[in-house]
Amino acid sequence: MAQRLLLRRFLASVICREPSQSRWAPRASRALQTGQCSPSNLTVTLSQARSVYTTRVCTTTFNIQDGPDFQDRVVNSETPVVVDFHAQWCGPCKILGPRLEKVVAKQHGKVVMAKVDIDDHTDLAIEYEVSAVPTVLAIKNGDVVDKFVGIKDEDQLEAFLKKLIG
Image (cartoon, rainbow, N blue to C red; front, side, top):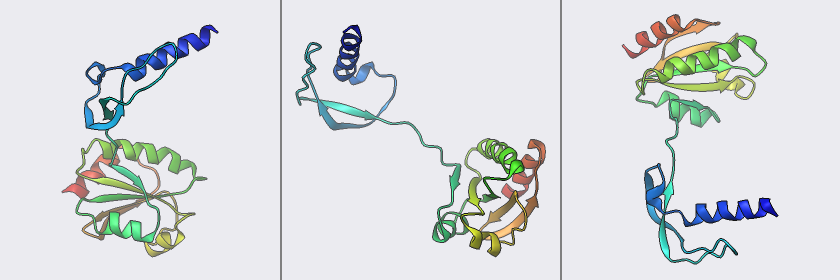
C-alpha cells in the first residue's frame, strides 16, 4: 500500500511538473499535450503544452552496417576517418577499441571513427587487405593514407591522428 502511494505521488509530480522546473533545455515545445492531474486517481487532461527534452548524441564513433553504409560514411566523408577493423573474439581489439575512441573524442570532430566487425563484413576486410586484427586504417578523401596492425599506446595513437589531420 505504501509503495502504491509513493509511486502515485512520484508519477503525479512528474506528470504535473512545469517545463521551467527541469534542468534540461527544451528541444521542441508544444510537441506533447498534458495537463492537470490529481494525485489520488492520476487522471490526465490534455490542456497545456509540454516540452520534449533530449540529450546530445555522440557522433564521433559509429558502427558500419553494410557496404553502402561504409561507402557513404567513410569513403565519401569530408572529415578524415579512422577505421577500426576488429572482431568480438579478439583480445587486443578489446583493449585498442576504447583507447582509440578516447583519443578520437579528444580531437573534437576533426576526425571520426568507424568500427568494422570483420566477421560481419568480410568483404570490406578483404577489399582493404586486412589480414590480422586489430587493423586501423586512416582514410582521407576516400584514400587510405596510413595503416597499422596491432595494439598501440595513447601517445602513438595521438601521433597517428595528428598525422592524419595534418
